[in-house]
Length: 87
Picture 1 (cartoon, rainbow, N blue to C red):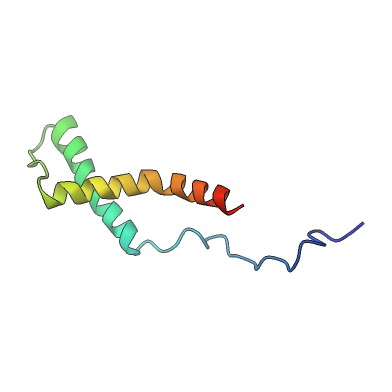
Picture 2: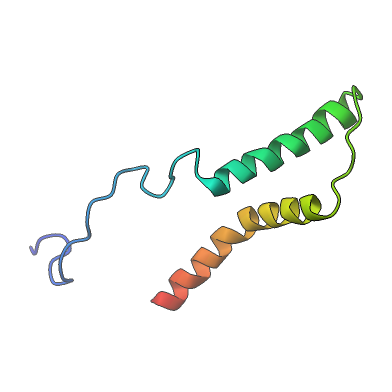
């Protein structure tokens, strides 16, 4: 019985379990945390609990928040398409 992966070239390098997760302080994650905190405050504190008011985002801040949210939802889809094309 041949060894596992025999005949497919050199073995892939070992990766640690967190190799694709990254660090919490990466710029894309920090932006995501900021947008998440804003929307959490807006929805939970202002709307659900009725304990305050928050001005709506406008201009550059609104565009940036929308881009950050879009990035998080679209990123995995783009990665999957790129992986399929790479095959």
